[in-house]
Amino acid sequence: MINKLQNFLFIKSGVPRLENYLNLTALRHKLKAGNVANVATPGYKSRDISFEEEFKKLNGSTQGLKGELTNPAHIALGQHKSRPPKVEETEVVKDEFNSVDIDIEISEMAQNELLFTIGARLLQSKFDGIRKAITSR
Image 1 (cartoon, helix red, strand yellow):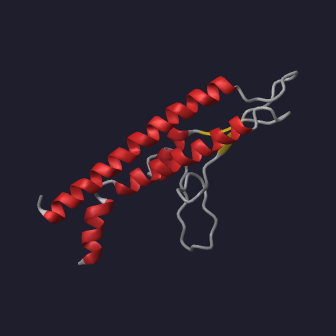
Image 2 (cartoon, one colour; image 1 turned 45 degrees about the vertical axis):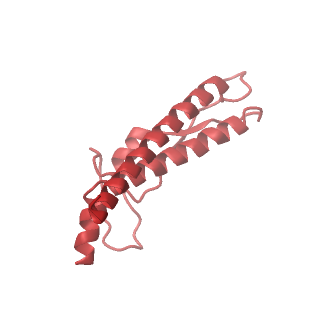
Image 3 (spheres, one colour; image 1 turned 90 degrees about the vertical axis):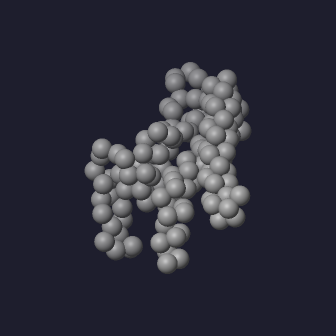
C-alpha cells in the first residue's frame, strides 16, 4: 500500500522530472561559475552541458540508442540515464588567452538561475498540492 501511495504521490506527479531538472541546472551553474572563476587562466577551455539533450536523456525521451542494464555492475550504453552528463569544452582560438567570454558566461548564469528558480517553484507547488490533499485544506 505504501509503495502504491508513494508511486502515486511522487512519481506520477512529476517530482522525479523536477528533481532531474534542478540537478541539471545546479550542474550547469557549477560549470558556469568555474568558467567565470577561470576567466584569467591562460589556455582554460570553457565548459558547459547541452541542457536540453541531458534533460531528455534523464527523462527517457531521446531518439538515440539506449542500452538496457541487466546487472548493476554493467556499464551503461548509449543514451542511458545513468550515464553522466557530457561536458563539452570550447576550444581556445589561436592567439586568444582562453575560451571564456565573461559577458556570455554571466548572462548564461543569470538565465540558468531563472530556470532553477522556476523549477524550484514548480516543485514547491507540487508539494503544496500534496500537503493540501493530505490535510484537506
